[in-house]
Length: 356
Image 1 (cartoon, rainbow, N blue to C red):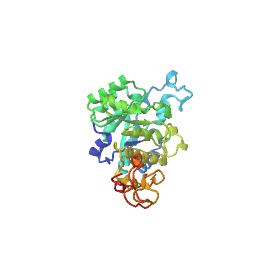
Image 2 (tube, rainbow, N blue to C red):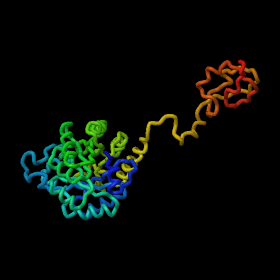
Image 3 (cartoon, one colour):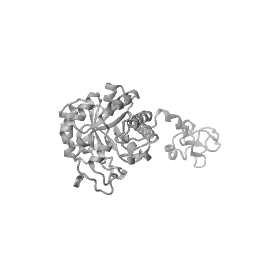
Image 4 (tube, one colour):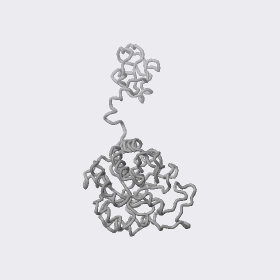
């Protein structure tokens, strides 16, 4: 299966440079302002991100407008403590009428426009805008009918695994591939906001790829970019990170979103991480060969006359590296030189008395 970048390089002309496909997630960071949403698109383009992602839902498509019991967030550790689910989704949602302006601005700025749909109606809206790929959120990884509908578009799919068990991930993969998806990426995702590096468990990523035979990457809710770079080093081909203009402005996802300068650094460092992986190589690359002369080697350290013995005092292991390798040192001690040799001469076999 081609990586997402390889696939989209064929269908949408993005650069196929071997780096991870990097998604700037707007989510609800527009704070109910279309102007701010468009400014986020502009800023994302400047960071070097490959795609800008929004979320397509309404509060009513997500939950019920109730305040009782489980419809209010009661965990005091939550960023959204005390909010009702309906109220939170109403604040965070991106209105349907904003989708086309955002999509148009993304294309103008050279970004791929994509979204996370949360209902079949959302998929229909995104198809009308010719969305090139889709993302399934971690909490929806068990919504097999939704996964089936997205897969039927034939577009590349990304699914965040979140809290899904191996069995649940297997069901999602089977549903997606069985319904027509030919390019699937599973993202390791810690479904806490923000997430800590200690709870990220990145070594699970390649196991996901090996187990299910699909591409893998990271949906990152930690702060900073160290976790994303580590994911790149482990072979992650997609990195998704929340993006905001200014965390101080607040917003539903502001606490774990990167500002433009931080996101630019993320893109740069992930590309460097991918470039650094290279291939298994011993003995020094072509660019290192000039450095061989800086290695230690054997040198004559005193003026010698023909017939003199080589000793620890007159045969030294020093820099530069133009003489015989230090591994010959023990063999050479006690041998005689066959001619006069000046101090500073690199040791070579032809200096020896062949009869000694």
